[in-house]
Length: 380
Image (cartoon, rainbow, N blue to C red; front, side, top):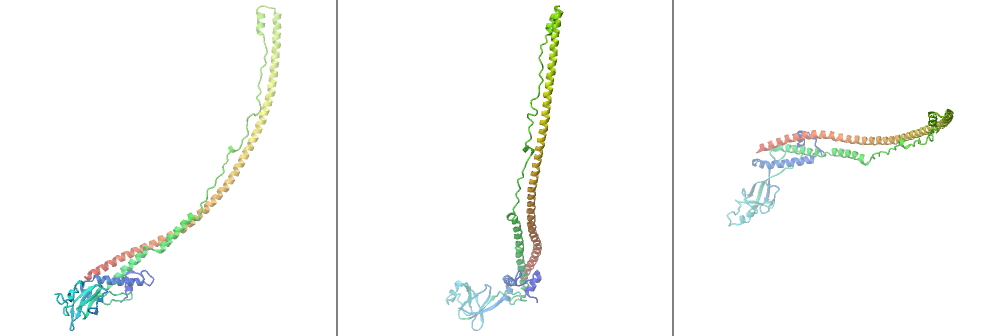
């Protein structure tokens, strides 16, 4: 016959040794507890199969280790007389010969008081049967002082408790806890060990910052044309003609007017010549000032472009440095996240295995528990 350890392993698929879960020491306890529970559930006709005899002298109480006392006897010198049970509070009365309940050698009594069993009358050889709870080892193949029909239930009990031990261990897998802690440690480093790059201040410039040359005062004052003033006395000539005055006098007046007209024309020509001279000078000044203005403007634009190019170069350098810092930060974060993900994958993998095993053990425990309950019920 196989040992109890082998039978439990066959029912649970567990390999049990001194460092397994459960250990052999724990299996011993499960088997012993199972035997005790089964005895406590046995019907009365099977209890004598679990009992052992104990002897003592009445008057010197014997210490009990169980409350399941089956039979108590006192020898009267010829035979062992059965003892009737009385409450401990009546032990004084049964010692009184005048009392109707007086205990005699042919009608002895026993009582249990303070965890001890005693018999009256005193001084006799006594014996009693008490149910014994065996200590069961994983190395045993059978249990002495135990009904054979209940022996397999001890193995079932040990198997159920062994699976419960495994299930309890699955609820607190130290490998999973370690992996979760490691993942959290890696993720915490993102905050504690890596500095987030600070965005730089980008310099700005515009053409508004470049002073353009002013166009005010270009060419000087604009030349003006002054019309000559000549007094032409045509009305006086007409008067002389209308009054038939001396035509000679009228002719003289006409000559005077013609002379004035000639002078007026000469003045206009002189004024025109002066205006043309000033206008030419003005146009020359305008051309010169405009050329200088255009030159200054080109210089200003060139300076502005140079400033813009320097600004772009400076900003590009700053931006490139910031970009490199960002890439380094992202690389460090990615590395830590990848490391944490590795631990998380390990957790998920272990959880899948544990979940599958937990489900199998849970179902197997239910089956074994049902077999145990059914077998225990069959004993009654």
